[in-house]
View (cartoon, rainbow, N blue to C red):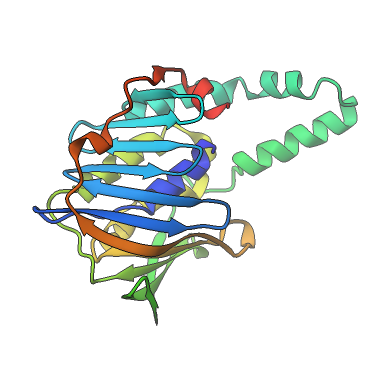
Length: 257
């Protein structure tokens, strides 16, 4: 999972808990299933290949690879700094990986990869608009309303929000938004996804939990996630800990395996 995918995943997986219990969401996606735990200003996302833990109170995030039993932990700005160094070394890494390919084909492949992860077509201060479509659906037993996110006039995302799962005081969405802005501002390849942490989108997410997310980047219909089960229950605090047998690793080791 690359950082671009992580950021859109995380920015659209935001809500909070009541003072008495946490929430567990089971999601079904096109490429993988995911479980999300939220409680006490912490959020943990788990899929077969990666674990992500966010501690809003401490301004800290953690990524772990359960297959390799390794993890990285730090602040969003630290991750952005390390990811920026990786991007600066991209040409060298691609040359090494594509060294066996003829020069003409190698140049074409390098440009295609750059276009994919760093489009370079986004304005530095995008105009973000949230549109209430008036459409609705029932998802995981909850009524949900469809909102569209338009960036510089172009449809970027669609969120189905349920008012039945309200934001509360135990997960500070505004502080989480600041964390994500700190991350995305330091990584050029994020592109339009940096706009997803805008005040307009955060205000929308305060209406309730997004039960369905659709990505329209590149003009393609691509459902990122669909919640299929919602549970409200007390979550043991150890759920948000990294297992003791995991070893600390670099950003390259985490995202390169």
